[in-house]
Image (cartoon, rainbow, N blue to C red; front, side):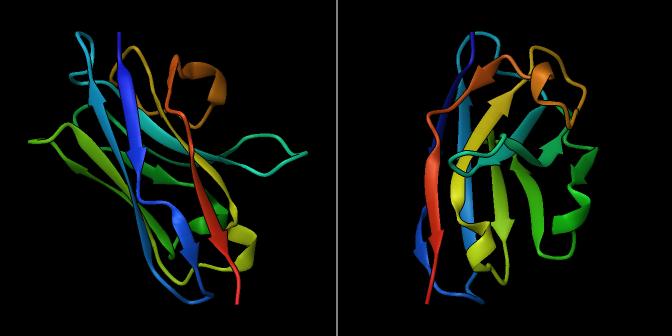
Length: 124
């Protein structure tokens, strides 16, 4: 089992930077791939970024490259979503997810464990 705890969401203005955190715990939480997805009401949950269990491989959605990065803190079993120059279109509920294995994936179907979500709202 893997439990995911997200934090760091909130309100921001266009151009701000935000950092979301996701800490994994539980008996199966080591060396698992993790990812961030986001969801806007009425739309499908969208892939944002993923990192492998070894933290050697990362991938960010093409539309977000240059603004978003995903980084690990292996000592804390935590991954961060670093969001720079946020825009109103980044407003969404952001979900952390974990696979049952170490290989990163952009496919929502590959993720077994999900956090409760954290709201990010960008407006002026």
